[in-house]
Image 1 (tube, rainbow, N blue to C red):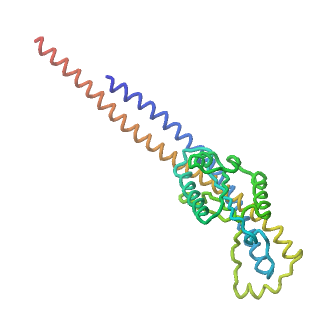
Image 2 (image 1 turned 60 degrees about the vertical axis):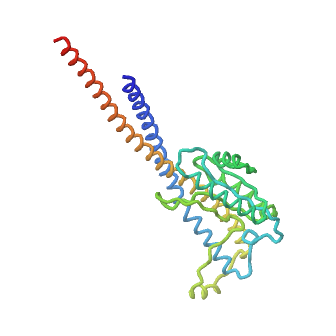
Length: 292
């Protein structure tokens, strides 16, 4: 009797857990759909502005900008920004990011650099404290970051780089490729690496037709900071999309596991109940036979 009562309690607990994970799966699905639409809307703009900067730099001859040039006097300092989640229950999302971040931090330290770490998300803060790695600053953007929230951080990084406070800045985040593939990425934010402009015959012949108004230096001075800000914003948006899709998959797996465990418990409950009934019938028959 005690075994049957214990199985019934477990059945109720598993049923409750299944309801919770199913609800979390539905919430994660809704958030994933919304964040994916925002990421898709912003990606063409980010890609186009980087391409435009590359074309202007390629056609401007010797013109360059400090944001895409190494520091003239290296200070042997590097800033690494780790983008993680505020909440758990998202599968291996944070684990992949932390492994990539640790690898980047150790490689930079082995090269003789002083590494300064900043984080986005509570999980990265807790992990780095556990690893006894100092965190200079933590940033909070929420589930629906706006460009106006990310822009001040990007502008501060630009100002610090131009002031020579660090030689490079890298961002560790989860890049969203598709609903079934997310890859941890270590992106070089500063100095900015530009895509190579196409050097076809037609492109080379058209280079002489370019006239810059305002000058190429002024155009790069306006476009490069914008490209840095948009790249950082897109990285954070990609991280949120990846977090939501991985949480959706994790909660679906948990729901399926709870359903399977519930079926197993129901089967064990029926077997235990049948065994109890059989035992009672045997006792009744044995008692009747003894009285006869």
